[in-house]
Length: 476
Ligand SMILES: [Ca+2]
Image (cartoon, rainbow, N blue to C red):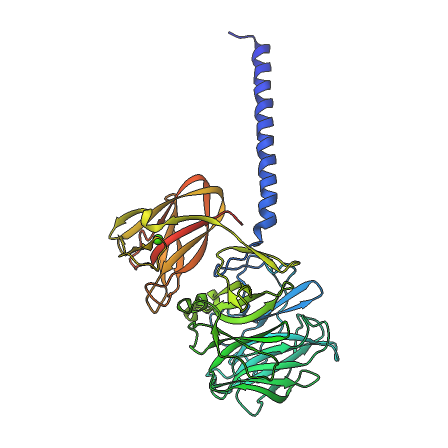
């Protein structure tokens, strides 16, 4: 038997050691926690992921536009939380870094008995500052529920988020559906400048640019028309004295290859259309909403990935827009971050795991060799009895994982995703526009440090999309 004193002192030493170890663990945890929490509100931009605001709610700012006032960015957009196309609100979010967004009061809300009632359409709100009147002016596509009215609405406010006073509705003497506005010669409302309405007119056949009056309450003169161009979802960036127009074509809620055009003045003939991204990707399944110039001379493309059957889940495809080749091109990035002061970006690198190297189960098969897939191979017949398990390395955190999929259906598919045999979550998989067109769909998964399994397509009766590969990221 050991002496009581000895036992006590040994116990005490052990307790002291355990306590010290626990304290170190707590310190490590809290320092990790601090670092992690400091980045938790999306220091990275993840196109197509569900984006949430600082309250944890889904960001509802579709078809949006940005305005910078001092060091604050304001993001205005359509609130589609009720999944209806009808007008609910023009939301207003603020951020100083373009990644952390806080919802403010609604900028514009329905007024019964007017063209902005909750049985009408308000889309693509854009705001600019009018120096003469020291007020913010919002323009938006104003329409009836069947899109038959084809008009423009104008509202104004003394503060950026408003609320805005609905001022007027402009029939323009011609139809106007999708629209944006462009303030020439400067950024972000610092000076009063000539501003223009950019709009799809004449049953979406002709795209027009008209100059606003000094108040920005109306348009006075049509300065340009791209006849027969069938463009919508426009935006303009002025760069080195050239006017770059970005727009989609018209295919309803479905994506199409968005285009760019350039002209030496706002009223000059624009160049023939060119693609912003590889045609087959249909602008990475997105439609232009806004194009934000960066101080570097490059820009950010801000697009919508519409999901017409569940509008509230429509996501945002924000991508670097580079002129590195001399002409504007989107740069696909699964996970990226922005240095606003320099106007530069950094694209995260991750670890790739080819689906064809995973463990196939049931009816899952490796598809015939096809150069559109990474490694020329992908796994098909997932779901409905087929599944795939891929072993990946984690860092013990919630990590972004990009699933590179092909879905040739005309509708979305979905797949179960289960980590380490845990409960499944559902990854929504858009149609990619062809069975050999691959798009990357992100999902945040909690991985443990070291080896993890990710199982795709198990326990579901529907077929999932084909899977080319996954990339696991450590940037949060
Ligand atoms: Ca592959």
